[in-house]
Image 1: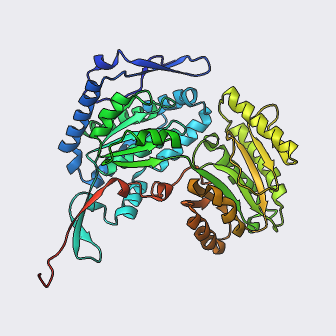
Image 2: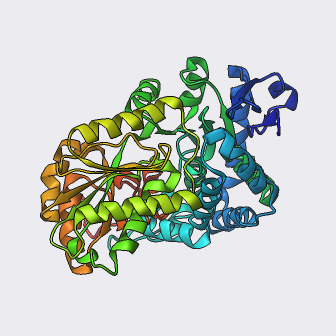
Image 3: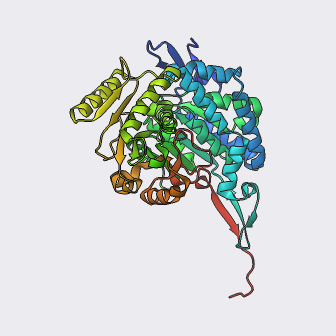
Length: 473
């Protein structure tokens, strides 16, 4: 099955330089083999020279709306189920990532939906007001000044492999601000960003020449020294330890943007717990838990449920268990290591010994729901293992979440509209950067402020032209 398939995109490097590369093996029998380069520093320098020169000659002066149009066309290719790169991704990513084929197929569809023209324009407008400031000097509203945004000449992205699609999202951000982009793929998923780069070449070969995707082992100091020394911005994803290691190798004058470990949760108000609506609420919570098997930073570790509604928090937990069982038939959990299964079993055993009520998937560890009255935030061992905890009122959440405030990210909520501003303000002060309806946690809008920051504006610097004043010194 596609043994020896290429997993890189390296403009400017002759094919014979990469045919001597290494291999990565995937699947239960390690029968899927991907070829990856074993680059030398000289070869990496050649690639960096190629993509930055291409950026200077083409991308730097390409109007941003033209970039959007080309990206939208590439995304349109992926929207066709018969598109070869789409078929390769659907066929191979289950073996590479362990996710089920259905999860990969639905995840790719959601990713593409968020990268279309309207989404990109929304993000550009939200962050810059006038996206044309990436092309030329534009009036800076209310100041009398003219201002222009300049993206990095070279952005280096260091990816993690937990959620397919995130590397594509990151590279798109870099292209929108007219950077040459080098993506350092993760060993856990090196294929999708390379496939996307190849598809971009079908739309605009000159634009694709501004982009490189490759793999090297983590901590390869010689290669990272070359890449980071040339970069104007380094964007890194991963654990806190991995990010600290990368940060230590990035020059102090280089912009470093880190996306590290985060924790998310659900919050359900009593008004949503009607006898008619509780099933839908449970189904939406189950969808958030099941998406990418709870591996994303946006995945809920637990769900807080407010007491006082027609359906009790305990009954909501039971409904969530039924919803996860229904979802397992349509969207089965992927393959996980034996150690992860053992961790789930241990969590179940400890919960039962503590007096919690536990619902489990028949005959395995596909899903687990734990109902316990202790409202302390307890991180999940993931892989569709979720706690449900009752609270008298959602106003109790800030002190419960305060111990993990630096790690908070997304809250999936089911509360009436009139309560949302108060809840959002309290959680926002604590550090939550995103609230969304329950059931939408897994797939943020492209325009969201990732970890509370701009996706594009953090990558650029501005040059301002001030008008003459009436008086002179």
